[in-house]
Length: 222
Image 1 (cartoon, rainbow, N blue to C red):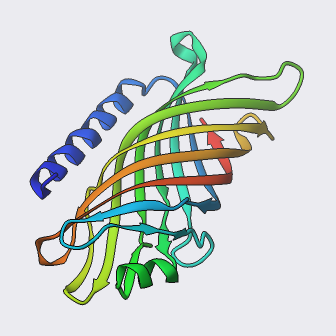
Image 2: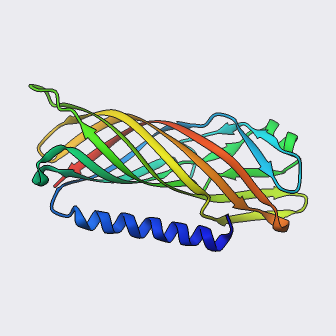
Image 3: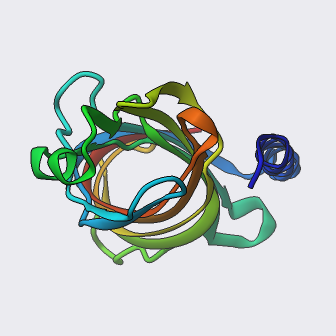
């Protein structure tokens, strides 16, 4: 995917999300912030001008910049569907290649540490437990990944944000309502991202990154 197509894809996706968000303006809304522990399994890396290799990833969730996320959710109570929602979710996930990966590739530096940033539009379903303040929920969605590509090798250095491609998301968790407006939650969230980016010397890099996270956060409903 060339740069112009990436920009077009990203602009179209964001515009579609904003248009849908505006159409749900009359529904119950919630703003959530969260952090947690995020990891990623190994993935194969294809580079157009050298042999492929396998990347071992480290999450380093609490190192700067930390792993975090922000989510806006629209619950459709006024539309007669109080347990169905739509969320716009931004996650600053990140991955760092380990030392053995750098040795195998012959590179000095390889990471998406200013984020393999994820922007997704998700459908949610919540299942309040009668007589309690616990509210389990599940969700799934699609969106884009916007990695900050950091590669340093003998032929040059890459250090910029790019639209990498598509991502899919799945999540499951439970919220606890402290008050009418405030709740806390814990959840599992997984993303699978197809990353296709440009690096130095006109080369391309492709890899599929799966991030797994256990999150804890707080929500304000209005």
